[in-house]
Length: 459
Ligand SMILES: Nc1nc2c(ncn2[C@@H]2O[C@H](COP(=O)(O)OP(=O)(O)OP(=O)(O)O)[C@@H](O)[C@H]2O)c(=O)[nH]1
Ligand SMILES: [Mg+2]
Image 1 (cartoon, rainbow, N blue to C red):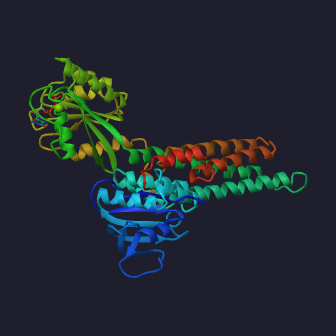
Image 2 (image 1 turned 60 degrees about the vertical axis):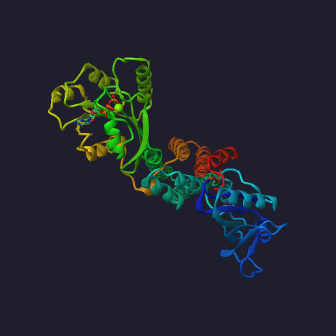
Image 3 (image 1 turned 90 degrees about the horizontal axis):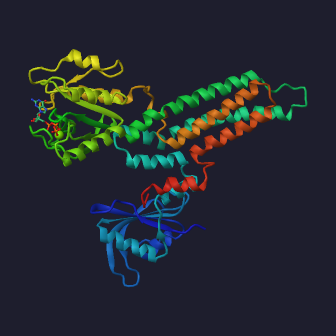
């Protein structure tokens, strides 16, 4: 029999309410021992809310006035008897109640253990359990939409449909093995090969959504670079909508890098403002410029800011050339001032795949919506727009899909080569196991532990 686990399910700190969650066979006993209902009730009905006090059993001292609810198995989140105690949201209250719950026979839950129990008791499949984590950690509404779609079982449904089609193929292959001594021709080799091909096509389409899924879920990093004084910090402040970085007319104002997250059309973008690049005048600046190089090397995209009121310098040209291997967005700032920069010379520097330079005024806000659009298009360039229902956001899922399709391709080739169906059946069976890793039917203990240990305690 499983033991009973307990944890504070709400974040630390003060709040309107704080919730203690208990799951396991002792939930009901713990409730009876610690809870004094405000109106006389002998039985705890499942899925009902009761008002009363949590007390220290030996002394009867009241710790908090609470609302409790009991969810009896199997109709609870974890599939076990579950108790939820809604306390007032104070750190000492919650800690004291939790201590009493543990004294009454529960033990402290491991991270993600409630969700793990829900999975082990078949309340949710693994892809849905992972979606719970993605929902909690979503950085934008689009990220949340993708996680909710996965939680609602859309990915599991799609995988389930593919699973059924593969099982059908396996059945045909196995029948043809059984009947191979008879005259009955149960196997239409080219028909099976065609079906396998179309399943592989579906799997590829699914795996190809990962690039976009990862962008919306995890976001991208964009580093703002340029000579000193071109307006990098002004641009960061403008994009953030607040005065985050110091802006002065003194070249070399920013020494350290400044990082902030913004939401650009549903994509979490980590923006980094950096020190202006030039021949360093002192050790501090040298260190700052060294950091810029590191940030640039790791960036998903680079925004090179140029000063439109000055001529293109050798430093500007060098910076552009150095970053051509990255996703590069050239930006001409200070367009509110008389133009000095030679546009033709700038365009000659930029290969066809680099978007045309964007004209902005960080100081007055001109061109900022267009800049945001360009950042979004550049980040998404190369990916197709997919319906959110079928976007793969998890590398584990993508890997399993790819392994499945490799095995199915192998099976198809074996069938077309006229080799005995046993060999194809072997690969198809293995492909089914790979597919089952997504929903968790065949996932090993170590992988499960790794997945659930990333959750917070109380989830
Ligand atoms: N006229 C005008 N001035 C601007 C614009 N953007 C920035 N500036 C001015 O340019 C100067 C430098 O701006 P910053 O944002 O500090 O430039 P930076 O690139 O971060 O400079 P460093 O940190 O020294 O590398 C400040 O005086 C800004 O007010 C703009 O669009 N138009
Ligand atoms: Mg600056």
